[in-house]
Image (cartoon, rainbow, N blue to C red; front, side, top):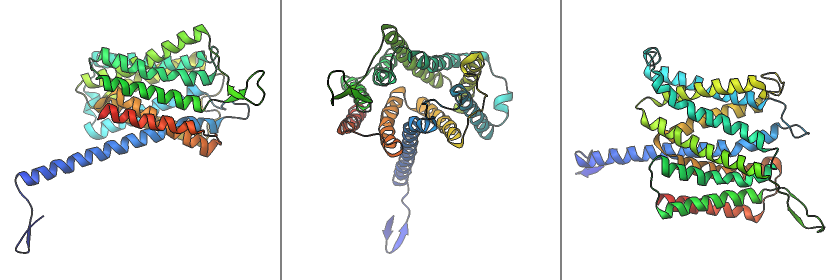
Amino acid sequence: MIVIDNVSAEPSGPDRSDRWRWGGLCWRTSRWALLLLLLVLIYGSHAPLIALTQSDEGGVPYSPSSCVVLIEFVKLLVSTATLLATEGGSALCGGVRWVLVLPYAAPALLYALNNNLVVYMQAHMDPSTFQLLSNLKIVTTATLYSSCLGKRLRPIQWLALGLLTLAGGAHSYSSLEREPEAGQEGHRGPRLHVTGLGLLLLLLYCSASGLAAVVTERALKSQRLPLSLQNIFLYSWGVAINVASHTGGVGEGRGFLEGFSALVWLIVIGQAAAGLMMSVVMKHGSGILRLFVISSAMLVNGALSWALLGLQLTPLFLLPTGLTALAAYLYYR
């Protein structure tokens, strides 16, 4: 406000324009901060919530493939409703060319491949080893992001991504289950094992994860279409592929909704919301920002595992927290 002779007057001209621009920037920044915070919380709560659904024998009383199908279906329904609300029925009834839909088949296939690889890898490595080594997908994603999308990263940014990988490894190591080592009573160490085939499958898993992120980002940014319509393309492929996987025997002989509780439905809704919000990140942000979201989520994972599951946190838990913050500062400064 400008006050002249006790009479207030609104600024005009450049002053008003600057204030509007500043207000718009603050609003956009606040929305991005809220979006990223929600993503971190949802991703971080995923594993602890699944652990709460496990039976005493360690398994889950529902079909995981049914859960994945429902997550994709919910995302498809929300995307369709959003498109109809914002663009009207003409956006769907106007005719869609297959050349626009086909690029979304690749990421859907890659995501489905990764879901199945996680199952197959359990026979060739223990879960702790998978948790520890799967952090290499940060490196593969960054490499593919740089080479396939032509995004040149500065040396300081590569250093930041290296620190992010180290943070993931430190977090995974700090949460490993400890067992007494042979011949050293009272001394407890992590029990790890992995086969040669397991390492090859892990490399395929990390590469597929990075490639899925890259092709998704390229498809979303290369087409001047509403994001909700692009999501319909992506999730239609996702529903089709995961339904085929479920009916092909991955359903483990259970009924489609057998064993579903309120907690399982919370997981479905949460992961569907996370997928929709992550598409906004991939459309208007980047796959690298996605990596920072997932890495930050591991800290929420550890805190919730301590609060809900009684996981004992060690002082090493503070190391990935600091490394993640330092990596974000170095990458985005």
